[in-house]
View 1 (cartoon, rainbow, N blue to C red):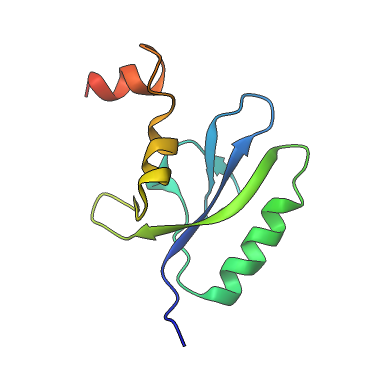
View 2 (view 1 turned 45 degrees about the vertical axis):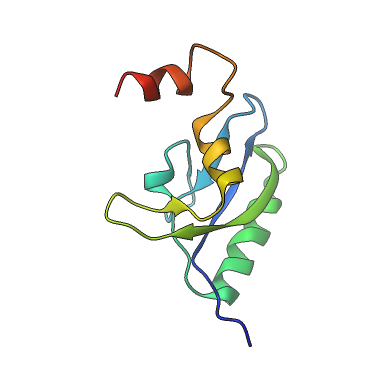
Amino acid sequence: MPRFTPKVVTANALLEGDVIYLAADDSWTRDLRAAEVIEDEAIAQLRLLDAQRQHDRVVGAYLADMIPGPQGPQPAHFREDFRRKGPSNYAHGKQEDAANV
């Protein structure tokens, strides 16, 4: 049986479209470092179901594989890294903020 890998619940904010992550206190955050890292498959499924019921706040909720690290969770797949950074064809927003760090 395959081993369960750590995950976060991610979605897009319904009104703004930004990538958001579910935090342990049931709030949504745009900062991946503040996301709840879930290491139990049953809990991950429950958290996902709770997120998917929030039709008034989020769209497209799913579980994303993460690698725990000292700076918080890091995406295990390049798709999640792209989503975290935001559109790369704009010189503002998340891309501009990342360039100025």
